[in-house]
Structures are given as structure tokens and as C-alpha cells.
Amino acid sequence: MAMLDILIPHYNDPEGLALSLRSIARQSWTDEKRIVIADDGSRPDLRKAVEVIAEHSEMQINTVFNQINRGRPYTRNVLLDSIESPYVAWLDAGDEWYPDKLARQFDQVALVESAHMNRPFWVTCNYDWAWAGRKKKKNSQRTDQDQVKALLIGSTLRAYLWTLLGPAQSFKDVGWFDERLPRLQDLDYFVRFLTHGGVIKNVRDDGALCVYHKSDVGRDADEIRACNAHIFDKHRVLFNRYGESFKAMRLYNMEMLAARFAQNNKNAKLTRRYMWRALKTRPRAFLNHALKNGMIA
Image (tube, rainbow, N blue to C red; front, side, top):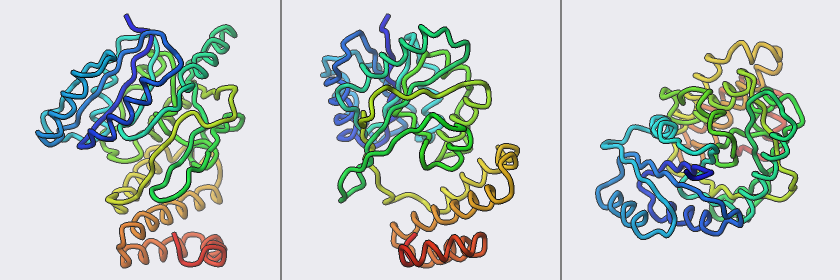
């Protein structure tokens, strides 16, 4: 049995998948790893490309194919079902790990396990954002705070699966990804992990250990807003815990995030609609943003 399962959802991006697999091959951690790729109903020619990539790799790769496109949360659930190894890490096709990611995270796993902490845990890491056409920017995962509140804010601790490594059981025990969330299912999954007693640790390394190739192009602003609304309703008791001002700011940020997606996809009418809703929700915050950044979401 391998020590680590690496779970990769894929859809219509064999070049991105190959990039991710190269970053796995370059890892300084050399224990046995097993890669599982779940293809979510890609076009026949691109599905064939995935098969060729897996067949010619020197790494151990298992492939699973959805016959039709079922969406990211369904595909993540397929990957959860595939787990066999005692530890699990995730990597989205198109993103990359830097060479020491697994080594640094397993160092932290050893420290946590030697402390005999009697609760489930995940180990995250700092990461780079590589926006299309911009320089990379490091983002830190601050775990020394109220982790639920920080995730709901989404600034200094973000719900990105591809930053994680942890015991397999700590992922299985959370349950299924919510298939009603085509976007932001990671956030819901993280919140459920924490509210059921889990804790997120960071590595003892201040540098970025992976890179997220980020773009808003082609992403649906209305879908993003609907997913945020679903999470708000589903976890309303948590939002209520932090007070009315906190809730209002989260609703404001939901509108501004949707405005950003609309703007970056050149939908001016939709951008204005979400900005107007943001203005009505938190007028002062919106005006401060406009004075600092102009009318840019």
C-alpha cells in the first residue's frame, strides 16, 4: 500500500493536468504515492489524452471516468470513495506544488501525531496566487486565530483543498461534498470539518509551497453568488454567532465578489447590478472601496 493518495479532479484540461503531474514528480518526499485522477466527463479526445498521460507516466496513476459531466463536488466525492492510503492530499488539475510541499507537510504531520492530539487535523501551507497576466503573490494561511470565523471572512485563511495534507480518516469523516454547490464546495467542506472538531495546522515554513493559477474568465457571477447564498443559509447559525455587523460585511463581500466575476467577464450590466446591491448592503464600505480603487470590483 502507498503511504499517500493524491486526488486530482480533471475536466477538459490535459495540459493543466500534465503540469500538475510534473510538480508531483518533482517532490523531494520520496515515499510511495498513489495518484487518482477523476475525469468529469471530458470531451472524448481530451479523455483519451488523460488516458495517454496516465499510461505513459512513471508514477502510479489510477483513473476514474464519469460518463457525463457531473460537476466538481460529485467528482470530489468519487475521489473520496477511491481513498486507500493512510494519508491524503489534493491537487486540482492546472495547479502546482513546489518541490518541498509534501516533505514539509509530513514533517508537520509527525509533530502533530507525536503530540497525541486527540482530534482530527489537516496540515495546510502558504501558497502563491498566479493571476493570469500578473506576477505571483504569496498568500499566508494563518491558523493561529478563530478558524471558523477566518474561513467565513476568506482573507487570512482560505478553503483551498490543494493546500492540504492529512490522515485519510480526517477527510472521510467530514462526509460528502455538497453537490448543490458547483462552486465553493471546498468552503462548506472546511467549515463542516472545523465544526465537527477538526483543526487546521500550518507547516513550519514561511514560504509558499504551492501555486494556484487563478483566473475569473468563464466563471458565472450569478452561480458564485447563488453558492455563497446557499452557504450563508446552510451555516446561518455560524454567521449569527459573530453578530450583525459581521453578517452585513459578509453579504457585502458576496455582492462584491459576484461583481468582480461579472466585471472580469466583461458583463457591465451584471457588474452594475451587483455593485448596487453591495452599496445598499454596506454604503460606507462600498464608498471607501470606490475612493481607494475606483469603480472596480
